[in-house]
Length: 312
Image (cartoon, rainbow, N blue to C red):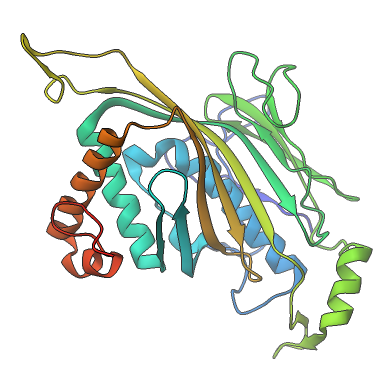
């Protein structure tokens, strides 16, 4: 059985032979699930399904985050941890706090900027457990940018090496993406098998093999570029409000997966250019005000005072 895509998103038409406007998401080939796999299982097949679903969800939702927010929250662990150690030294843990902050950032950026656009330039999967996920590289950069996979020869491509691959085609934002996925029937690699044997394998309630102590986790690195223009009502001069030129930032998100194939850590790295201290202070003040207004208990748990300053 191959990892098949199910073209079901109502806002985009299904692809017909020779067509190009297909939007796809992970699901098993028989039942229709909003989330693939049973989170109580730790088999390599279930793990690969969940990681693949999470990658597709990130690729689909991040460019639209300022419009739609995070819609599919099933890919995140209940204990997900968010860290940004370069500029703010911010850290929080738990799914409710993570989703609350994502919403606060979304609305604060929309209030501060206009014409916001988040572009995914590349995605890379680092598989530490030898599950056949490494080499899954997506180049989303435009204008000939090659991204991680080192290619600039036309449409972006996502590659996953597999002994029995299945191939489907879908758009990546505005361009076609070719994806190859591993068969769920293929065995795990020799390296992963050795780790599994050393850790132990048990049997689930249905008699299927279940990893009791899983192999090392997978991480996904996303390079992104954010562009937007500060609203003229915010930029005041002696002559009154003025409209500045567009602002552009680039950075990296690193997503770490737990042994169930759920995202349990999100690290924000390498934001360039470095935001000014004033911009960081204003952003924290705005976030603190918004968080206190909407979720006072959450703000207290995070440690943000009414003015946006940390009280820890």
